[in-house]
Image 1 (tube, rainbow, N blue to C red):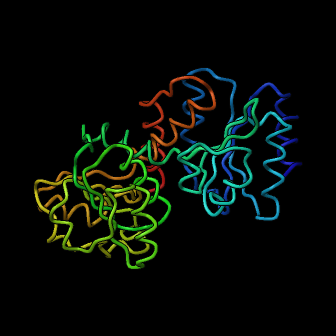
Image 2 (cartoon, one colour; image 1 turned 90 degrees about the horizontal axis):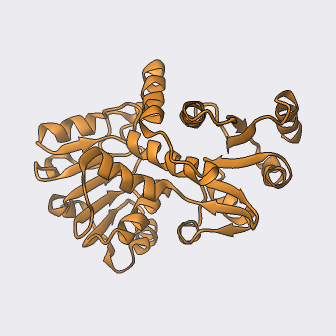
Length: 287
């Protein structure tokens, strides 16, 4: 890992600032496509590369971030929780979640962020002009994405947030992130929601025929969001559309969690339309 980073810097004569995504596996990540499009658009001398890191090399990556010209780091599965204990400091959101998906290198050391929740809130605004304040929300799932959006929706002052998950303990810990408005519920709560979010993997290509909840519970007064973006429209979203609901996929959350990181690293506003176009073109290429 050290040799890979040093080789990159030597090859580029230290003329470029380096950012990277780490995970295992990582070659499927859209992050290099997204960020390099943004860097190019703004004529920044930055380059973003994927680094497939085995667990034994993880600590070394963070040490290299302290000593080499590695100024931005994205963290994907399975290292988001481990990253939270390897940085020098976490933001309040990252600390509450116990997971980090973005690391910045500062004079104070390595700072761990979690940009998923704020990315989701921006996606709601971008896609549907939806303000979650005083709205009723149901979140399906209790994994990392569910936790991030639950915490963010709690900060956004929703009137209620119900987490539905097969495992009661996970549902309870996730709902608690929305503070006093978060509760654990069941499928009957879905029909009362203004916003329904699928934060499970049900609907991805490997299990595209599975629905995260019965579509008969969806109705025309709801906004339905599926965090899945490959495929762009899951069968569940299509069925929800047929029930009259407004629907959106997870592309914009992917976009805005990245633009949040982009600005943290560079100090510049991310070129949103350029980065969105890069996502869409890459997803089309992969389809």
